[in-house]
Length: 487
Image (cartoon, rainbow, N blue to C red):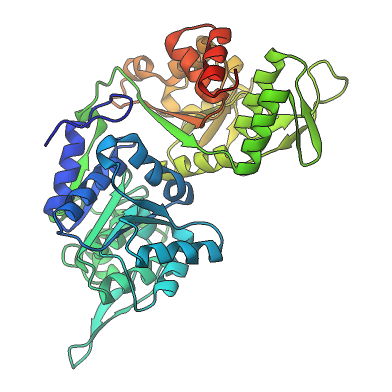
C-alpha cells in the first residue's frame, strides 16, 4: 500500500494498516484498539477500498455518539488527502433536516452516512423496507452490550428476532438480520468496561451466538457465577482464557504499550465546532471588542482583555464584567460543545478515573453541574487520598492548584485539558502529576493519555501554537490574526 500522510504530515501507522486489513479480510469483525489509534481513518480507508473495488456498492452507515457522528467522521475525510473523494454525510439535526439529508443517500450522492445512537430508531423507521445501507459501522460498540435478544426458528424454518434488552440494540439487530447485512464492523477501545459479561451483546451482532452462545443465560451459566451478595456476576477462573480463544478469529485487539514508548504520553486533539450564533459573537468580539450573549454585554477594554474573553467564549462561558469590578463576577453560558466532548471522553473510558484541567471559575461551576460525580481538587488531604484510591471518577483541577510535589499518578493515567491557559509551564506541571515518569516510578506499566479539547478557529489553537513553538503570546496572536484575516 502507498505510504499515506495526513495534511500535517503524520503518516498512516503500521497498526492502522492492520485495522484496514482486518476490515477488508472479515466482513464482520470487532476492532478493539486503544484511544487515539486512528480507528476512524482506518475504517474510512477500508470503506474506500471496498467501494472502489465494487465489493461494496451501497453506502456505509456509521452509528456513533452525536458529536462524533456530526463532526469527527466528516472532518476526518478533510484531514487525509487520500480520502478526499469519499462523500461523508452526517444525518443530524431536526427531523425535517434529517429527512432531507436522507434523500441524498437514496439519490446515490453519499458514500458514508453517519447518525447518532439517539436517532437510530428514527432512521430505521424512516427507511422502512427501503434500507439503503450495505455496511454498518458501530463506533463505540459497548452501546450494544445490553442486547439480550436471540434468533428464533419455528417449525417451518422461519426465523425472527426475539428477546429483551436495549431497545436501540434490538432494533438494530432486527435490521441487520432481516436485511441480511453482510458487513458489520464494531469499534471500541474498551470492549468490556464492567467485565467479560459486556461482550455477549456485541459479539452476537457478528455471529448470532456462534461463539459465545445463542442465549445470554447460557453464556452466563457457562462462564460466570453469582456474586456473594446475590447480585452481579463473577467470571469463573477459566472464563477469560476460553472467551479469548473463542473470539480470536473475529476480533483484532491492539494495545498502546505494544506500539508506543511508555515514556511518551499519547496525545489526542478533540476538535469542537462553535455553533453558528456563537461563532458570530466570537468574530464580533474579536474584531470590535464587544458582543452580546443572551442580552448580556461582553466587552474587552484592551487587546489583552480581549484574548481572555475569547478564551472564555471558546470554553463555553464569558464573564460580563471586568476583573476590577466590585462584587462577585457574573458570567453567562454561550455553548456546551466542550462539555459534550468531555462527556463522550468519559463514556469512552467507561468509568476510569480522569483528571480534568480547567482555567476559569465558570468552567468549574459548569463542570460540577454537568458531572455531579466529579470533585474539585482542594486543600483537603482526604480529596487527594480519595483520588489516589480510585474513589473519584473525575477530578477537576486548576493549574495553580496542581503545583510541584503533588502526586496524582496512583489515581489514573488519563488527563483532559478542558480549557486553555497561555502559561505553558502550568500545563506541563499538571501533566507531570500523572505523567510517564511518575507512572514508572510508582511501578505502573501503562501509557498516559492526554486529550486537548480545542474549539476550532479560535484562540484555543493559538495557545497550542505558543506552547509548541515557545513563541511569545504576542507573536502567536499576530500570526493567528493574520491567518484568520483579522489583520
